[in-house]
Image (tube, rainbow, N blue to C red):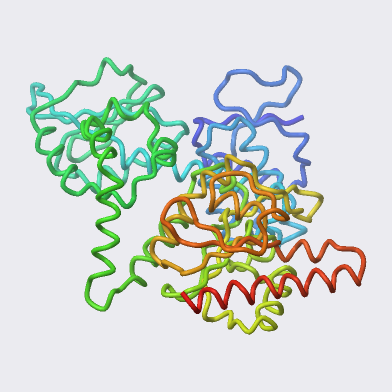
Length: 463
């Protein structure tokens, strides 16, 4: 066994040098213990420190280096071993870094994403407060990071506040800037940081003036700005009152956008799509490749809502392009509906699946995931204002009506939607047709599906 002792929890250089030397010797991952400092370790392992330089050179994809720089900052104790395992595999599988379905790649991507979010939170939620010492004003802030990001983030605050003397206190370590030199100190406690100062009244006024009700997502806000940060931020005292009036203000903003020059709803839709790309309302975003948003004309009279993106949709970033999408396109054509004229989206915007080897098998979204994603469907319908919304399957029907519905009972007739008085039509999801084993039954079910689409389209055209 080999034990590698790294100087700090965020010691990327030490890990890189040790990993490069060990990989050059072809040391298997299971024969290495990665350790920070002198704590713990294997009594019988051979202890080593990272070499100053390595003569044996070999290349790795740049994407791996970038990934490793982020993952090393994570608090997961297995991060060094996981990265070395990937490094060892890359020497024989150089294209592996591009395989987003590989379990190891997905896990490391997830760790890197958590680190990047923590870096963003520190930049967004840290608040300085002024104190005085023998040298004059100093600005002090308290922050509790989840990962080892403080040293990495120091450059951002130096660039942003180069002329200030400041200190950032965290439980693990503190960093101090005197206008010329950055220094480190031991960890601190929250009580070591000062309370409010007069500048906060000005900041609160500014925050209230720029508060955007259209971007309020209470569940997502608690995930992205957990309440543990609120006590450090003066503006969060305003949030409850601002949220209370957000819905009315939001509706007014959207109607104003519709009445603006040219009724430029496309701009509003693009902003909504860009916001959805960062959605973290439910845990599905952690494993999916990306948010798959709706597509189609923003003035479409007919909107189709499916269940969720599948494997191909998740990779292509487009709804209904896989096997079910091909059936959907054929049914639309036979119903006399041009797909380019309709708006197509899904009730859930991220692909939910079970990993089986290298295959990702579709898994039906749960009630919590459907409810979390109703925000996006509501906003899409508010912007597009379709005359008819067609729910393709039970998940879509639940997203639109807010309750469990049986397709066989509700199918084939227009129904009023509960929120805005619009109409909906419920039918099967095209993937249902794929699952029918009997050719005759499949043909009959397809014909009925086409008839549902035709009747919904004709009713939308008459309204």
